Image (cartoon, rainbow, N blue to C red; front, side, top):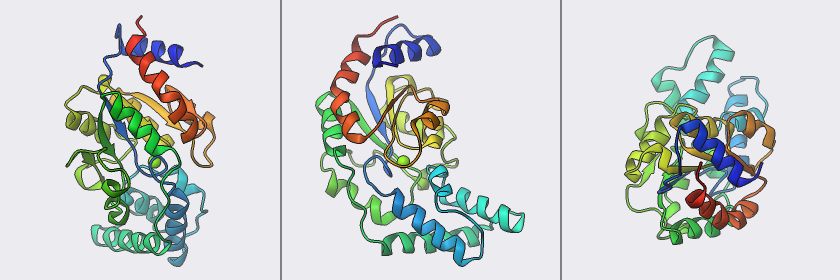
Length: 247
Ligand code: MG
């Protein structure tokens, strides 16, 4: 599907005549950082050390959930119950340590170009991540200077429900001072795409890991790009199409 058809489909489903695009709500892991390999490795190490059966790739599918929600999946499988708050805190700290031990994840190639285009186009930017991984959150302003204004970030700390619940993106839209239907969500994970759509945002999926594009379409993505480089290249035209396409 081309971009104009995708925008028309979005407008039609939302009952809108035109797209008053004002803000971009941007996921972090797998979008700004090529970090998912390290996250899945850290989760796998933590779970296998506890004797919980799991496979490494399953953690790609949990991306966007809070750490506590992922720990509950593992606990329900192994013990038939959710983790207590103390267990969840301790195990998430362990997973975070293993993630940090793997070294700093690299910036996603061309994510800086993508962010510059958003800024030059006059769109407000809000970071919307399910992560509570301080080692990576601390790097955002250094790696992507001038992109996110102070406080314009939704993390695991300020939501009750992680993705796929709409709360993170609804909070992001509120932080941007916009309605959800004035926002473009930029995601790489099926649960994140579901969250963006549930919030009512135009939702872009960029496949930067092993999850196939069909999975993004099934999750409701309005448009899918095969890599960050492809998306960064297409973004000026996509923004122009958002501003000019009418029903
Ligand atoms: Mg992500």
